[in-house]
Length: 289
Image (cartoon, rainbow, N blue to C red; front, side, top):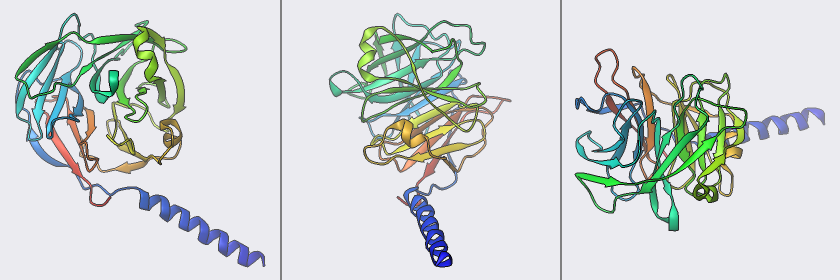
């Protein structure tokens, strides 16, 4: 009887593992689709795909760069730029697309870099996605000043839950990176303290994204892309409480950007320019859904 029970338990265990594996889409190896030779795009630290304009990608430089979001297409051609007025780029580290006021599609820019953990607050800027393709535009973004419980942190990863509108920031330099949350309804308060959610089983997170339907989550560091499948009705924290799956990643000199295409069947990565190597836009395509 014990043997029979053990066999059943073992079979059930294997079935659960296989079921979890079946939930994870396969992605192919990275394909280099573009080399960005524009000298103004040499410190790229964030990437997000437009939800309104197929094939359009938003990128930006980090500390010392202009307070500008650049637009490129999926082949790396520069299309335009959006200048953020009354704003500085102290250390922009990531960009995300998600719901904003009145449910519209917004861009969120994370002024969250702090290598030496010396800033008392960080800032998230947001503004509506442009309704049409542009060559040049200017906006005055909304902003919120944020503090961390326990003091300053360095971070390079920002993502928005498309279902709830909640904002998530991931710390970088902790031995186990922490996920922090700002509930969507607090953005309009002007200032807020982030909530600690969950520790991740790795360090040096440099970029993150949630797919447009909310069902897929990716986080990358300099060596690995980590992936979680999120179930219907599940919170981001609960989904990320499971062990992540590692996805393909083509090593980059200093890769600090990742983003899903709106259909969730592709993710892109992009690096800063390092060692005289121009940034390469890599495309990873799903091999199964």
